Length: 126
View 1 (cartoon, rainbow, N blue to C red):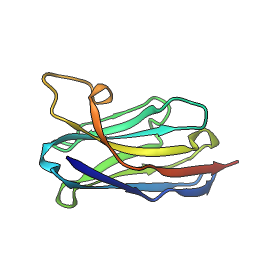
View 2 (tube, one colour; view 1 turned 60 degrees about the horizontal axis):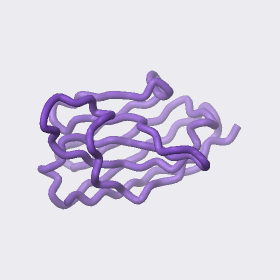
View 3 (spheres, rainbow, N blue to C red; view 1 turned 180 degrees about the vertical axis):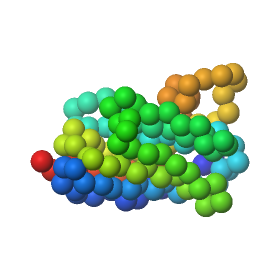
View 4 (cartoon, one colour; view 1 turned 90 degrees about the vertical axis):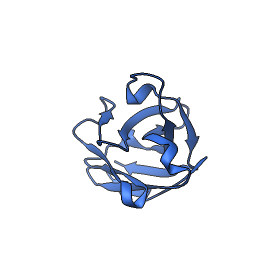
């Protein structure tokens, strides 16, 4: 299994920036991709962004394209989500998750993410 620990959440004003980190430990070699998801109060969890550990291929939700940047540091087994131009509607608990190797081609947003971190709160004030 892969253990994931998020950090970097907090309170920021609209237009500001935050960087989330996700440190992975355990069977990290079995992880194919890392994703970020978020869940706002009263809403379902939604995909935000994902990156393959190899090659750095990325995918973003339309709502964050051009504002968020996902990256990874393979040497540190750590992933990052740089969030810029934050909006109040970005307020949510953000989770990182790990997905194993798919059986065939699959969009990063549709992989089976079966290892999850505990989440970190991001609050954007207007």
